[in-house]
Image 1 (cartoon, rainbow, N blue to C red):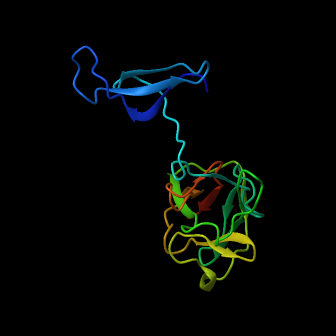
Image 2 (cartoon, rainbow, N blue to C red; image 1 turned 180 degrees about the vertical axis):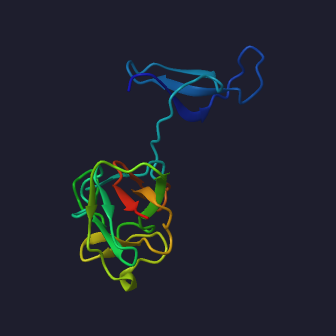
Amino acid sequence: MDGNYWSGTEYGGDVQGLPPGYNAWCFHSDNGAQGYLGKASPLYAWAVRDGDVVPYLSCAGFEPPCDSPDVALTVKKNKCIPLKTELIDENDISITDTDIEYPPVLVLVNFAGSAMPSEVVAVDGLPPSKATDGNQFEFIGGRWCFNLKVKDYYTAPGTYTFELRTGSQEEYIIEPTGTVKIVVEK
C-alpha cells in the first residue's frame, strides 16, 4: 500500500529546538523518499523483522454435517455435535498440532434467545462420553476436532453461534474463521 511508513528509528538530530526523541525516520513506499516527522504524525507501520508478523491461517470450513454456516443444527440434549476442520497456511499446507503451540479454540459469539433460523437440521450426534473438555480443538486423524456438548452448557432455548478462533493471536490469526449455529429447543 502506498503511503508514508515509520522506519522504527528515532531521528537524532536537533530540529528547531524540539526535544530529543520528538521525531522519527520515515519513508514513502511509492517513491522511496526518506525523511523525518514528529512521532504524532499518522503514518503506517510495517513489520520487517522476524517475529513481528504472525501468519494468517484459513479455516477450510467445518465438515458435514456442520458445513453450512447458514444452516443451524439441533441435536438431542444428551449428545455432542462433532466439529471437524482443517487449518491451511498461505501455501495451502495443512497445519497440524506440531506446527502451532496453541490449538484453535471454540468461542460462543452470539446467542439469539427467540430467533430461530429458517433452516434447522437434526444431527445424530455423538455420545456425551466423547465430549471435548474445555474449549480447545484437538488434532485427531489429520483434522482439528471438537465435540461440542450441548446438554450441560447451553440449556436456554434459542440459537447459539460459535466460531473457531486462534488459540493465540501472537502465534497466528485465522481468517476466515469457521462458524456453526446450534439450536436448542424447549
